[in-house]
Image (cartoon, rainbow over the protein chains, first blue to last red):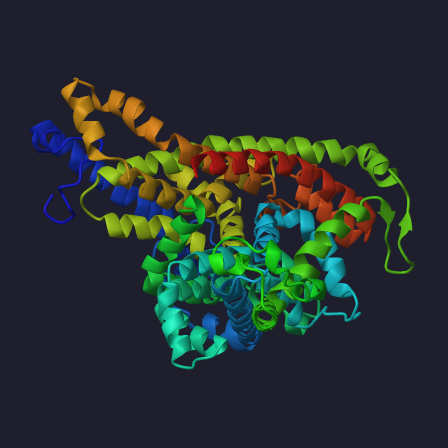
Length: 296
Length: 316
């Protein structure tokens, strides 16, 4: 019990843990949990990455071996270049970072206006934005698709353009909700004193509000990238042109025709950026998770 | 939208600054007008995006259910025709039944597993960071990768699962090809992929239970099991309720699992509401029929959302 904060009291009393049976039971549960989690959640990822290194013949073997008999890292490079997954990977990058850019611009300025500038009827606008959180995404699939095909008033067809991903992504009520809640906690005096020093409304946002909001900006940015990166159905519908597909859609479309080891290599490539992002920003992701669900 | 920023209406304003209730002098009125204009300038992009891709589609979605829509000709009102055609489709009932079955199974697996996992994790004093990280790893995978991976695991030939069964001398299974097992197989993937989120939410909530409650129960001679039942569960009731509702709303919209793993088969055993909706809209291009289906889905999920909203309200 040395490592973690042993002072916090949970279901099982510290005294029960120190008894001999308690200690034995604790070690048993700890051991089986560690093993169980590794087998359940880590091993499948190992199986995917190592499967990509096996030869096609070995992959078809009905009795697979734990370690690849011979290493074939070339399936990674073949998947990247000759199957063209590199191209789809870049498509995903463009879609994800574009969506990040527009989400930040649109949602930060909206949350700033609603939190600090507080215009007439601002609460009505906020309420209408938050109301969309209650709607199931799938119920809006068809009408949003038809809107993207023919945007009202301007009559533009956004199909096969990245705008079909970027603009709907910018209408993100969850972002506005957590950004506004964070901005609300910034003291108004801070903004006022900057204004007395001659800073304009935009200047106050950029040099006072945003530097104070780094933690929440990190959460919003990570979720923006992860959301677009993982998406499948929407990009499949609005980017039907095979050359514009993100990697998720391409993997599904090509899964029947690609050699199994190259497909696995492609799956690893599609996952690595998100796994790295998670390992680096674990704390932020978990913070955002609980913030979104518990609603403070 | 523009009508709003032209009406500064000083008498209407809220009470956040008392100065505003004083009848405005002309200079002050101009300043308020300017402030509101600037504020709406900041809000403009957000309002445009929401109007085009959220608010307008919501209204349009409801209307579309009563229209016949093809790309060839302008939309035409058809009354309740779409709904009548929906009920005439034998797959319609199948889809709802399958979705209900999936949701039920997902709750059996997906509701208990994260809670028990979180309770165990909360007691462990070693390896917590590692365990917390591993349970969340599948959540970070793109769903399509998860599905393709599991399709390979379920493969009756070189698949991992039948190999594992063989090690324990158990009979091989037709994971995705058997009518009885296919839905269970989909629920297994879905639980594996999603349980990390709920586990971490529960873990955070468990950490918030005051230790004195356990101490008091212990002084009263309550065993571990009774403490779990009489302290942990009541303290977690609210968050359990919320996640239950969110999970029902989420699982009723299941799509990627059947789309990639079974395509709705075998023998329509895994056709879900959303899969059928997808077929109506994007295979048959019958957007009116699909919209009638979304309207029904929306009403059903809306009922759950209302309950959710009431729950969160009563807590706040």
